[in-house]
Image (cartoon, rainbow, N blue to C red; front, top):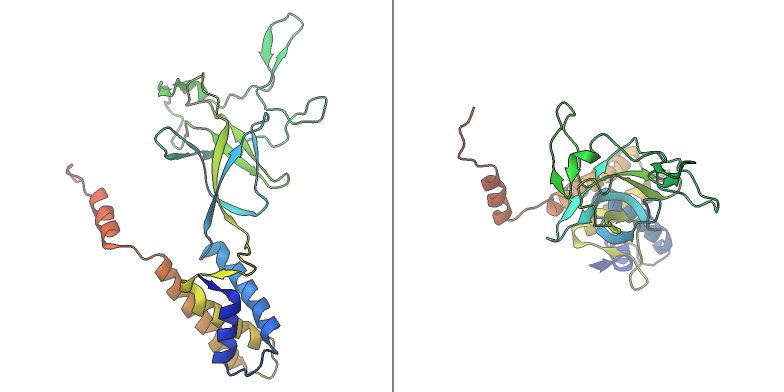
Length: 262
């Protein structure tokens, strides 16, 4: 990894600047370039194990931008992804202290028999028993998830969960979920880190932004700088997406079946 300070100084030297009068401005453009590429190119996936509260909610980390996976870790160490359900209710009821309650909270009626208030029944939870599929999915369609569902509540900065125990044994209480997500830029040793794949992309970004606000530069020069940046960005994207020969062979073999082709 390279520090952004070093990359900015390299740019100033390569562009013919003999002093550091433009350093602060170039560094700020470097930060904005890193912020842009962090979201869709160079961002490193962060991993957080988050506890589930009594209302089946999980609080998002402070540096959260976008999730890449939300799931549960099973005994084999594999993360089983939860399913997205945009119909999960975000307006939860609250108790006497103002704390949100899960939709399957039991209450007692006047006869003394416990009933379910706003029962958390989604039409397929009862198709699983002790982690075993019981069938009865005729006509329900695909895309059902036995591990549970989620919906992002951006207003309250939480993940609302639902039907977490539908595919688990009844004596297992799920306590945590695993969140893999793209985070905001973070300082390391007092500076931002620049991956070697995007060093030239950051330099081209700085150059483009430096001259784009300069009225003395021609439109042709500004357009050339813009094209140089996107060319370096494409090259960086190819480097990030490069695969080894073993990975290519594994991908080819995984799609090779001995069954009859129709």
